[in-house]
Length: 372
Image (spheres, helix red, strand yellow):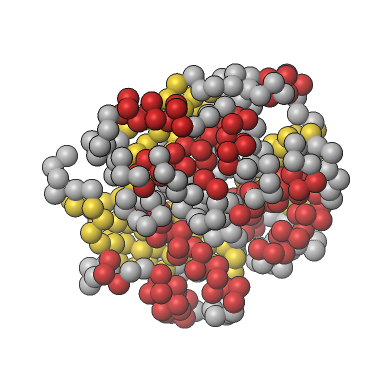
């Protein structure tokens, strides 16, 4: 690629009221409650939401005593769904629960410290932003978070919980130069006009969030392009745990192994290894060893150590990829037990990760910068 070649890259985010994120949040709330009572809990919980009905299914092996129905209703209320006419009602929604224990065939490998599943995981970091995230997904998350904040604070009183954001960034070479397009779709009360919604979103969501130097006269802004977004949440579209894996990671800017995060305890390397690889990639970049870094590992169920480690610094490395792999192997324990101990993943911290990205947030253990 020519160093000054111009191209566009787009990432999206969703609010916590989006039906898929509603499901992710419920799954992680159940996980955290299990871990709070029993740090050795094994949890793999999926949530499905449609119309005014929520289904919880999966496996839990734990000494925790919990009321899943109460957890579900409280989570729906916390997100802000109150009426089944336009979304879902936490008081009256139907809840179906189908929970079993972890398969003994899986437990046999996990009990001795092996990975809870086979699979491939990726971690990524770059210098585009202060939190070492790609610029497009970072902006999309900030817009989604702001959309929720102004709704919950009452600053924009006519918004509903469901919403999506999308940001298209113009690059020259590897440098984000400007924002080409901003798209915000937000649920609203039927009394609000499109003009009211558009003006409020531009003034109270977009302008306070996006750096002014990244917007110019050619930047296109779209707000609710269909003209109306009253029906939302599971009444407007079904929700399912694990369906926003690109939103959860790097907005498509880095590869993804395919495994979802929410509702899974840390013995599932889909989640824990992805967190560890983000930590390692971030610190490779933060320590000046590269400007971009992508790492992949692979695991086999029941086997402790990764089957492979791959590193790509996209020509920005100050050491060779093999030298960086050697640093990783010497510095970090990539067994499931080692990752869980290093990152402290037997604590009920997972609800903090669910919305607005699992990476790039302060105060999460895998975001800590260390000296390599």
